[in-house]
Length: 143
Image (cartoon, rainbow, N blue to C red):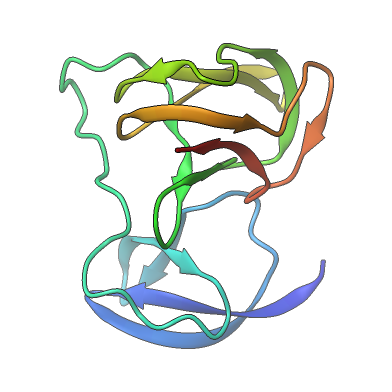
């Protein structure tokens, strides 16, 4: 596996660490016997004062699926894991709301719905059915 330096947030403190490329984002680590979810930011970016996107709470009346990753200004929605695009559920100029399905991603013989965490209008779609994506690849851009 490829090693790279990333910044991770552990209990509200940011650290630069070298890790093997994780299989998906965000990922979990074990610190002092406690499992912690780790957020990732671009190298050289300033540490955010708060998480870049709200994490959906289980059973909050939302559709079952994964939320796309957002960074910085939250206009580019990225893939939370590697896989193959099965279908795309949005097109340019579609108005979208939180919980709207962007696409269906097949990974490890399982299909996952990728959902939005906030509203907007689709400005660009970077994916098509049958395309392979890596974790962090752009899926759509919001206006």
